[in-house]
Image (tube, rainbow, N blue to C red; front, top):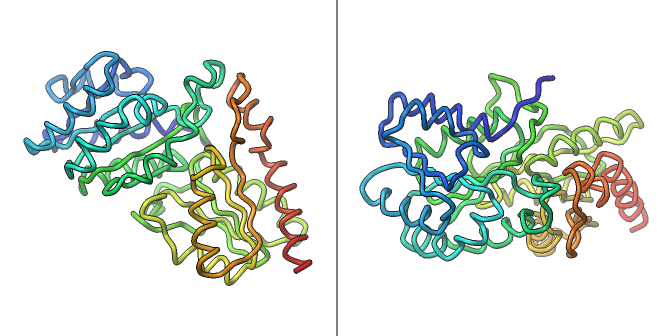
Length: 315
């Protein structure tokens, strides 16, 4: 199974699409290297804008270019894009209904050793509360490329978050990996369901496959689109499996798990476990070390699933 960085897949896809669409504009904040947009800047210098370390200006410029008919892609570290420029995202893009795609790289704890100032464990929470702004977290490189293509062909205000490191491929070359607003069922199962997004999808698949060896059938759902959420898939999972575990590289507060909890609580209450990063200042270290520390690894998913199944069976 090959490994590829989602940020590179996004940049490569924009390079391909810009060959026949001169309205695609990439805007960076001294971030073309970290966002994998160097090739784009060299191939299409007239379609590339560098603003320096000025994320607020970056978003405002994109909103203005959208008004002129361009398809701007704002590329910046997720930690800054979802905090430093939040007012511009809320007002200039979403409230003003501008077709700007916000591409946040190195999301979650991807920056690892740079610590809490560079973590984006709040971005799903804040971005999903902004009206008229979609939120998307692809799980592998092929799905990320499909996301790039979709939003070139269907411009709208959207926040797209990916990690930094290369991740294993989940989808095949011919798979229909991204359908806007819909979850993908990657494993069938009726004992329980895992609802995941981003890099946690592969971790969930690994855990489900190990549990399957014991005869425990876990449904795995990839929620690449966080907003608008696929309510039907969540309700169907609750009714057909009777227990749900959600997992995300984000705070346990107000992210994917909170969305799942609100829908399940309203529509069909079942035992639920929300896995994510705790509401504390996190340790500093390599991103995998941080995930391991807070049990966002295969072993952690399996342990939490066993506890969830006990709750289900003791009802």
